[in-house]
Length: 256
Image 1 (cartoon, helix red, strand yellow):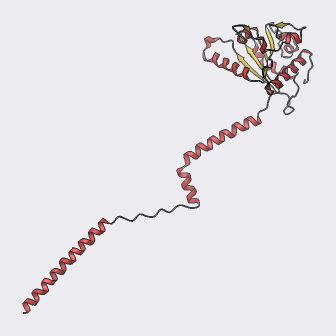
Image 2 (image 1 turned 90 degrees about the vertical axis):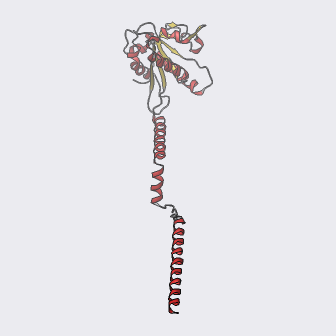
Image 3 (image 1 turned 135 degrees about the horizontal axis):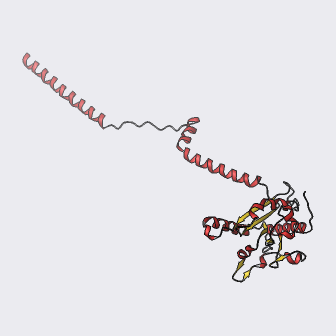
């Protein structure tokens, strides 16, 4: 009897162990199959948000800042740059020409006859030298100077041209010299030596002496472009140019 009882107890204990073992195995499998919980994303605030933005967008910010700085610089240059009362082209087409060395002196001489049209900064004469004497065999240099001439001839403010007789080739087409693009100074001042019925001789004016060019060659001439459009800037620039040339012919110095 007792033996049967003990045997039954042993059997129950074995069954309990088996059940406990199976439960532990099931619990272990469930634990393995469970996915780890993800930490919820917390959006940064305050300075943390600022630092986070700067970190991820620093390249874009640097590029944008550079573009803004460049734009601001160009605007300031445009606003603060002194605008000339007149603009003069000094163009050399001959290698032996002294125009390159005389360009600044010519600009200073013209300033004596130029009123303060803008009444802002005093008299400012913008002088642009263009060297066409090198010829096409100089390659890139010649092309740059030719491009400069083309740009200036499109600028309505570039009205006075002081050059040599070789400039004729650059103002001609298959029909010859394009006189309509230039004011007839020879008719306005018949007492002066003329060239192509448009230009007057530089050495026949007070400018040669004022520029310190006592041995100025006869082939140095002065052209003034004519008005070819209704552009207000072109009309005003042409008016100023003719007024300055009038003062030069009459030797009426506005500034000493």
